[in-house]
Length: 114
Length: 112
Image (cartoon, rainbow over all chains, first blue to last red; front, side, top):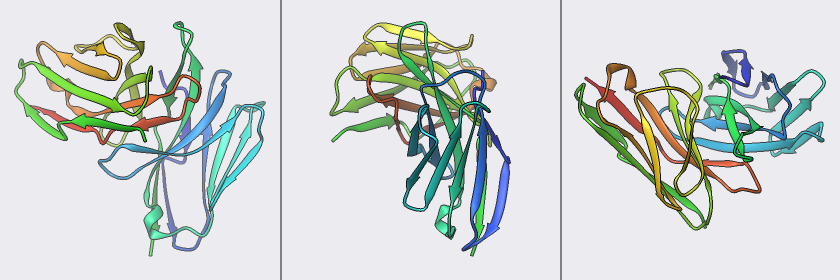
């Protein structure tokens, strides 16, 4: 079953604007990750935030995590046309085998218009 | 450095035919391995994951099976494909200590 749910499903912005995507999840997590997927390709890891962290930055990316609300947000500042892609949040859930498995949301499709 | 290979990139198979998709990882030992399926415009559905040779966990009942004959090899199979098996299949690996996942480039499977 889906653990994370991204919001909005699709987002269209002008180049230079900021893009904010949100993710909500259901169960307790060890960490939350954001991934990017270009059309028809594999996913690429962007950033990981641990459950005891509230905010993390990486270049033009800013991720926040609110474990009390079971939600996270991904902010891309000064967007570029090359940022056009689908973005997924993923949470790790402890499996019965004692290992962590990643479950993904349905993604936000971001379109940055030049 | 670690790399993951997944092939083929695209595949068209008739209904009822068998399937074998292979994924191999290089540059790491004892990886956790995953098979995901992505329907068009949708999120990723975890199909199988493996924490070791011969150890396979299935997340959803389906027409597919997985095997891990070697530490860094993960195979997705079907004896008889259904139309509903069409989709984009992604293999991924993660280390046991850091759950950041690394994905292959995916296989676009079309069952006709």
